[in-house]
Every structure is written in structure tokens, then in C-alpha cells.
Amino acid sequence: MKLTRRNLAILLLSAAARLLFPTAAFTQKRTPNKPYIVYVGTYTNKTASKGIYAYLFDPGIGKLSPLGVAAESEDPSFLAVHPSGKYLYAVNEIDHFGAQKSGAVSSFAIDPKTGTLTLLSQVSTQGAGPCYISLDKTGKFVLVANYDGGSIAVFPIREDGSLAPASAFVQHSGSSINKERQEGPHAHWIDTSPDNRFALAADLGLDEILVYRFNAAQGTLAPNTPPCARLNPGAGPRHFAFHPNGKFAYVLTEMGSSVTAFAYKASNGSLSPLQTVSTLSILRKDYSGPKEAAEIAVHPSGKFLYASNRAGIDTISAFSIDPVKGTLHLKDEYPTMGKTPRNFSIDPTGKFLLAANQESNNIVIFRIDSTTGALSPTGEVTEAPAPVCITFVAAK
Image (tube, rainbow, N blue to C red; front, side, top):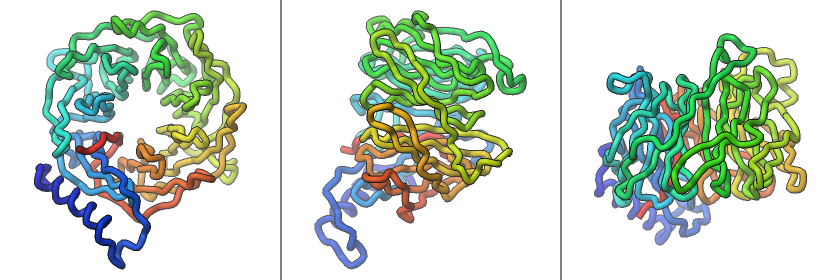
């Protein structure tokens, strides 16, 4: 479907009509939730994808409606939306950008009425294979993790949403015990702390969460004291999530398929380990196959944590969170009804979880039980070519 203002208007009018004129086909009680535009990052290399795709999401019933290609782009794997809702940023997970052995980061202007994206700028990430992108809490800087390059970088955002040259760059060094996957550094995630005073980076190759003092005025990084938190050797930290209360943090390890809970001390940016638990249920206690945990997220209520498992397991694990201790209890695993859930996202209302199944080319929607955190499929399955990141922005 071609992404046009007319297509979006039709979808919005259709949603409004169902609210105003319910029929037997729409017996579910509806609430007048405002729609969101969902942007999906993808891999374009050796797939049918052309770039970043847009969908209209109705949070009243948890339905995605395709709007088409929002912007053509090469391997725009991970996305981040500016707090203003005016701009979208994407890492281009490539190994060469121009004459440089580097990936790229692209900035786009969002048309709030149609969802189309207009390219504003594209700059080198100064390292190959960028795989994660985030914005600091002021919305003035973009932070990028270069997986293949084993480095991190910070880019100032200009007034028009385009990106200026890097204000900070840090090359990680070292290795860990797995000589195939941890022969060197592999930065896999980066973001700022809730108070924006620190930047934390998960490095799969080092088995470390590196902590930097972040200068929010200049966009610079300086090693913190202590400089890092260490994970079990060979665990391979991939992604990280703060609890909404800012007192706890959780690290998903890809190679260990585990979650480590930490107490976070905001005064000095330090992490103290509390617990490490498997993402796999007791029913898999004898499992000896490959482990490739992928994504982690804490529910906005702070009551639940979710983590996805790939490598043929293809489930999302649900944990309850102890509100006092911050520790986890694995409650259940839920099949994602697809192959390779590289990413998932909880919608802004906290009512739905959208799972991106990369190798089955679909997004499956689950309803979240607000009391237990249990996931139940809604029956909504939407086609998406090689989806690897889902993000939301309010539709106008």
C-alpha cells in the first residue's frame, strides 16, 4: 500500500466510525484511545524490505493497519523517536558508508498526518555495524552503539532535527572467554540514565555494562567511577532496561539467556548485582541447544518484565518484579507465533505487546493482563518484511 495522506485519513475515519456506530462485528467495548503511528525498522539485505515501514495502531482494540513504506533506507535496523514527535532516527546497520569502514545514522522529519519520513541527514557512526540507537532525555543528542566496531558515539541534534558531527566517541577494548563471539568488544546497547547524568553501554564482547558520566550540555562522555558492572564470563550482555522507579535495572544476556537484576545508585551511577535468572522455564531445565535471547522491557506499571528468546525457542518470557527487592520470578513463556522474535515493544497504553518475528516476516499482537502480566494473542497478525524494531509516535 502506498503511504499517502488519503490512506491515513481513510483509516482514521474507519476507526472513528467503529467507535460511533458499533455493530455486531465490533462487540468488544471500546475506549476512545487516540491512534499511534508505528514505525518498524527492518533488514533490507537479502530480504524483501525496502526500509522503514509505517502502520496505524488503534490501542482501543490493538489493531495494526499498514500504511506502507515510510522511507527507503538501507538496513535501518533500530529506531528512536524524538521526544517532540517531530523526528525519527535510525541506525543503518552496514559495514561501509562511503569510503569509510563504518555504519551510518539517518535522521528523518515525520509528517504527523501521513507518517511519511523525509531524510534530513545521514552521517557516519565512526564504527561498523551500528545496532542500537537512543536519545538523551533532553532530546538534544543521539547515542549509538557500533556492534562490529566495538564502539559508541554521541551526535548533537540541530534545531532542524538533522545531525551534527559526533561530539563524543569511545572505542572499547578487551575480550572475554568465548573466542568466537567475544574475541573483541561488541557494543550492543546504549542509553542515558533516568536523570540523564550517566550513559550506560552494554558490551557483549566484554561481558560488561560500561558507565560514563554524560555531559548533557556538550554531549561528551567520561569514564565513571566505578567504570563498569561485570556479568558472568561468556554471558554476553545484549540489552538493558531501567525500572520506572529508577532504583533497579535489568540486563538481558544473549549468550546466557538470562536476566541479571541490579540495584542502581543514581548518586554515582553504580550497579550492584541482586540476582541472575534464566529466561527459560523449568520445563527447559535440560535444554542444551543454542541460546539467543534478544529483547527486554519493563512494563510501564513496574510490575512485570518481559524478555524474548530466539534460536528456535521463539518465546517471550514473563517475569513478576518484587516491588521492594527488585528481584524477578519467571511466571511463564509464551510462543510468539512466529520465528525469531528479535524485538518486541509494549504500546504506550501498556495494554498490548507487539512481537517482531524477524524470520517469519510478521508482527504478532498480544494483550497484557494488567493483574498477572500474562500474554494472550489477540489474533492480530500483521505482515512486515524482516521486522527488527518497533516504535510508536502519536498520530495527529
